[in-house]
Image (cartoon, rainbow, N blue to C red; front, top):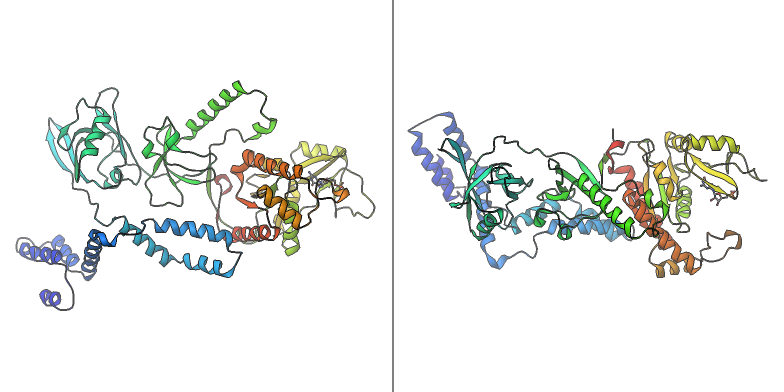
Length: 546
Ligand code: 5GP
């Protein structure tokens, strides 16, 4: 029966049919459940189809005429999506391309393409370890097929015993996937070469010079301590480049990242070097990054060095830079229907954050609202208490500021002005989106688990575009409203400097950066971000996510 099927409608893989006939021969020997299971598996159409696909792919992989143009198309797709997402508002073609490229079938097609292009289709099945007794010690022999991919393990000389041992296994790397090599295993031989008395460098040379299969003879560590991936995600508050880090134990194993990147910390068991992956690069091998403790020490060290050399160049609010910015633990904060996070527009004075706030409110005044500020100045004619301001006595406002009831406040011409936390909360509780555009120093008081603000840095464009757009729009200087004059060059330059300062001090806190060149474009980007916040989860300090 089987032969009949094999001959007619199915194109049987020769290796598979050979296995099936061998199995049939052994049927006489034993007829237990396991053999039945194996037979059913080998005879299944699905397995045969899979083997056929694999054979075809492997054949294509060997054909040099069919070399892929690139093997990272999925990465390119993400980059294109990222670019498109910023320009979607510009035209419908962009929008359509964005939607097409988001299709999961297309994305999986590209993943498959990349796997084939990277020749990642040979099975990485490790050889079963052969265990044997040698001087009453258990020895394991592990064979790995050498490919372009690094082994994903580091070795060191054990200080006490002087033996070569496995120091670290990189999560997701070849050694980790084999499941056969563990931290603490002692290396006795590599490709039949005894490594006793050799340095880790010598062993590396042996590895580099070997081709094909690498055979390790290892004494297993006492505690196999299977590595478990942690679920911790952090947002990096600094840039890191392992290539210029003189202290990293292995530069090739390092992971470069930039401030703002979300990193998945997969192992924290080493006090100084964590293993991490970039959040959007799910399948990648983990890389080494400095631990929080190490980075804190480095920053403190740098600060003491700097303080020693240039005592007076620092401005006071440098120390506002949240203690020591290293990593902040984050989690995805999901939108809750009817509960909107306050939108906080931060930016250099004059950059246009108030105008953006006004436009957002004008677009839908029922939905977007700003709190009525408090002031201690006397009411002017034409003003209505509770409309322009909530008018309060100085003593009362002083006491409330002292008690931390204001999310921001300032003094102007001898009078206090400020926004209370309570009025922000009452807008949120009313099911509206609270929109604020305070001074940047308000970030510290606003950024709480209770308010969960979405922080947007409204930045000026480059100087020539800044000048051109403001001239074009006949913008009036916000520094001298009484005279209704244009911005001066100095004001433009100050705006750019101030934006750089805000970025230096608080850049790591912003959810989004938005360049206010053409006001219409900046507004469109603002609207898109506000909509995104309502529909998609976004990374936020993990403390805010209950
Ligand atoms: P006026 O007394 O003319 O209404 O406003 C004087 C100044 O107070 C303006 O420059 C305005 O920006 C500032 N101001 C108004 N409301 C607030 C507020 O809620 N907080 C702070 N810090 N300043 C405010």
